[in-house]
Image 1 (cartoon, helix red, strand yellow):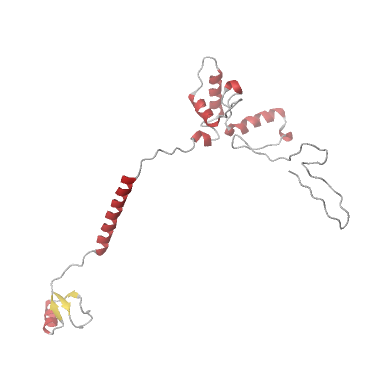
Image 2: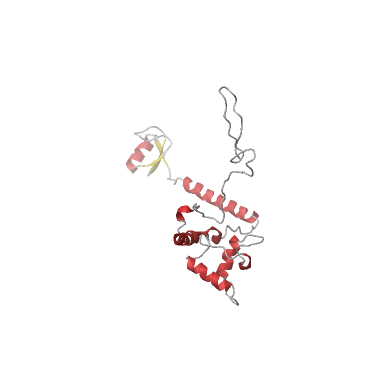
Length: 204
């Protein structure tokens, strides 16, 4: 049976409902330490809160989607623009397309057109126009081509090697146009006497 504790008894707390043996419950009731009661299941508060949060999230998401305006698809950089090989598996594949493009009455392969579209420079001597200078070799193939040529000519020891991973490289240099009043880009050398101030000059 279930009883609600009215007075302190054993280790049961006052005001709480317990399931006890019928004999013990009858004794508690007779001593006015408890009263008979029907057991009521305590509601699942955690489950109710979880369900309420879930419903609130679904409702808020539905409202946000209803109010959102459709936007255009944002397209990232073309894969060929980031690929040092321009989408080609090896240099032979690239050279084969170049030969086909330069053959009379033969259309330029679409693969070559797509690659050149990602790196063509506007203006004269365009890299992707065969009539203005030829097709740009993907930077990933340059080391192999250059090394083969260098080894043939024996110039390796006389060359300055500049590794490149893009189609352009910036090289700082000394801005020097005349040696009339200075050398090495505006730097002037003075011989300063003891305890005298130094003249100021700097290169550009």
